Every structure is written in structure tokens, then in C-alpha cells.
Image 1 (cartoon, helix red, strand yellow):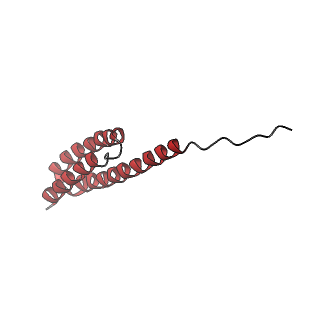
Image 2: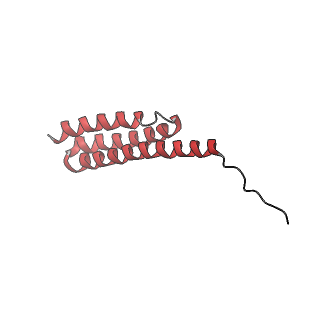
Length: 94
């Protein structure tokens, strides 16, 4: 009878996959918060809010893609859009 040994785990690949999952979670969470801010701008911001909401929505898509490509610090570009969209929401809905 031939004994079959299970193959060794590829731990570096597991760690790389986990790091990618964590990065995706960070970027995805901030992108969802950006979408919520855009919806707030669309609903309560009037004409200027709609305009800035669309700009923030496009910026969210672009920065989320950039954030996924950057890696560990990929949450920073969408977070910048979140801060700017939050300021725009404060200004346009007041």
C-alpha cells in the first residue's frame, strides 16, 4: 500500500490572502460609507448636493480601485474622499 502524505500548507500564500481580505474589508467599508454620504447629498443637498454627490460617487469608485491596488495603506484614498464628502454634506445640507 502506498502511503500518501498530505501536502504541506502554503503559509505565505495564506498570509497574503488574509492581508488581501483585510485590505478589501477596509476599502469596502469606507466605500460603503462614501456611498451613504452620496445618498445623503442626493437627498438633502439640493442642486449643489446632487452635483457634488455625483463627483464624490465617481471619486469613490476611482479611489476604491486605487486603494485595492496599493495594498496595506489602501484605505487612505477612499478615506480622503470620505472626509471631503462629509464636509460637502455639512455645507450643502445646512
